[in-house]
Length: 92
Image (cartoon, rainbow, N blue to C red; front, side, top):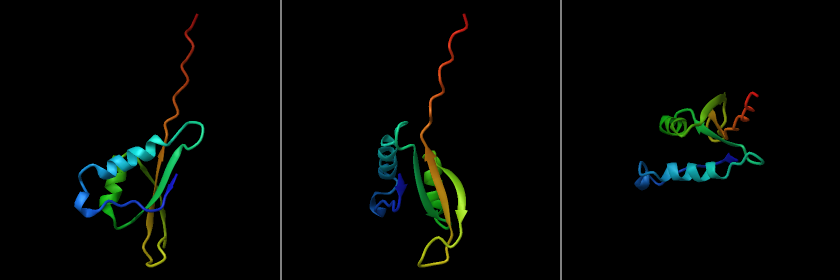
């Protein structure tokens, strides 16, 4: 899943709306099909970076001159579904 835009109206920020939106996206991940959520955050948007890190996303790379209207860089963030480890068979 590639998130192109993610925003919460300022009147409703810090009330759990963003967390609920990310939880809904995470619920769409499956082992068989969608395994990852990918998005970009402006390098200057520290609040968004901290939010996504707190939601379990990892910053994976810096993308130079990402935004068309500016020369601002973006940071790519990824969240991957955890694949369960196979249960080891009991020793006989």
